[in-house]
Length: 215
Ligand SMILES: Cc1cc2nc3c(=O)[nH]c(=O)nc-3n(C[C@H](O)[C@H](O)[C@H](O)COP(=O)(O)O)c2cc1C
Image 1 (cartoon, helix red, strand yellow):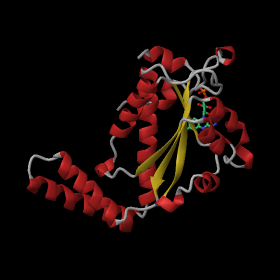
Image 2 (image 1 turned 60 degrees about the vertical axis):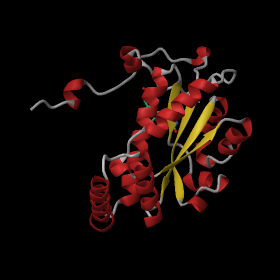
Image 3 (image 1 turned 180 degrees about the horizontal axis):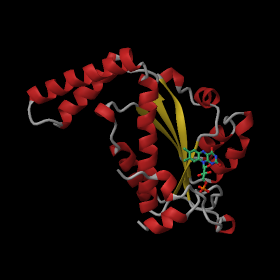
Image 4 (image 1 turned 135 degrees about the vertical axis):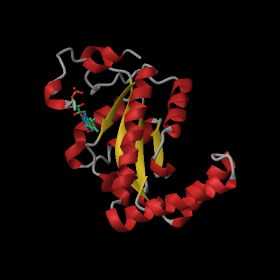
């Protein structure tokens, strides 16, 4: 990965509609997305991978009135992922996480798994009753997955642009997402830039002395 190049490039707003991510590359990226970590391994996500013209058209048509400018990005991208997050953590979800950890042999012995499960329950109880931020906390996990996947895409030579310009109510309805206990958090458009529309002007960020405090 060329970090210097990454540091000076704009996120892609114009994708080349004629280019598709090779299946092997896509699968590697999805394996990476699946592997991204979440706090207490809560795994609050479901991802809709729009790989067909019909899927992308359905999203483009349901971004909401004020977000129509993102439709072209979705349509021209090779793939767009809808990253959804659970609305809450029912006990059935927690039990499914623990069951999978046991099957995968996450801990060397049962007593450590059981200790982990009780610590996880305590932590979730804190989020539910003290911080009262369970959904917000889970959406932060989703953003970590987006950030990490953007880096993985760069490593694979794929451009990845997160999109927050959409109406979640409209997107959820179009894909029947709320029926699953989730809602849409963010979109990730993936593909290759249109060479005729790549910006070459510098990116603009605050200077380092405004950003970093060394103590
Ligand atoms: C989380 C996130 C959401 C974004 N959502 C959109 C979007 O909906 N539409 C869009 O055109 N750009 C979107 N962008 C791109 C940013 O506006 C852009 O990266 C920022 O203005 C800096 O510009 P640069 O990438 O050209 O340096 C998003 C970027 C991030 C990180």
